[in-house]
Image (cartoon, rainbow, N blue to C red; front, side):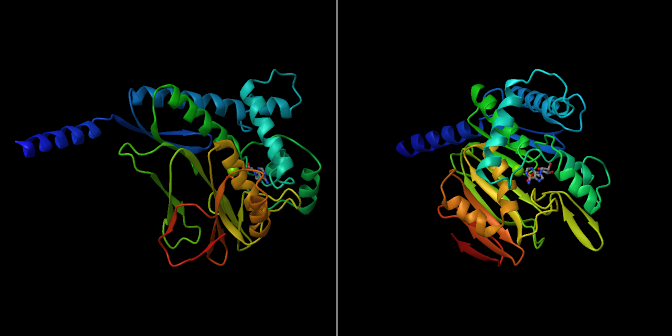
Length: 310
Ligand code: AMP
Ligand code: MG
């Protein structure tokens, strides 16, 4: 009899776990594919609301849209700034100062000179680079997806969702843990291309954001030219790093830091982390195939790369 009761309890528990409604969806916004995996009450309606929120923020922040708040600001138009636009500009400016301008949200003329707003980016002339570096215009491409991920996480939580994984093209937000109570396991891209992922990081309730040479690039003169620019030279950052992943409780910061640390290079990035100005963890991949991982991160490498704990 006791065995039967134990069996029935187990059955109830298993069916209870699998009864948590989970919804999955894909949506194209912010120039990237956004994917949702949401578990909890009214998961489909929660995704609808999250999509509406991402589209609303996309309309505010897109520099490709001449009517966005940022385009109007860049054009010097007299416009009212919404709370979201003000919050994003504040976060970006703080990061600019903290990173000694490795992260610079006013590179719009330079990004335009490299042709990243059109379909055929190409190497600009030295003169065009010099000219672009003397002008300023907002481009939040290095931080806006993180901000949107943070807003979506807050919105899902308000709707009673405590387990979700949202991926805005390399900007991942793990909300809570998996429905079975275990950590979310996030694949980290392999920039050397030996495999899709070089390893995994197990996390809960935080952002995992990756910046690297493989996300947007073009080939010219037999070389690959990526989209993360060094504000001091005007050229794509080239310092031995090929990829940076940041794990951080704050999505906006995680996104901005992934771009900033990529520009800094390994040595400066690690001393920036050691300075303790922000609380985050990192996975840096060098062009020699070494992986530098900050202490305390639950990272597992699947490939025969050298992992160097920091
Ligand atoms: P991410 O993929 O988050 O590293 O962001 C890269 C995007 O940020 C680029 O496509 C540009 O729009 C913008 N960007 C490029 N270089 C920088 C930089 N040094 N600081 C801030 N934003 C940048
Ligand atoms: Mg970024």
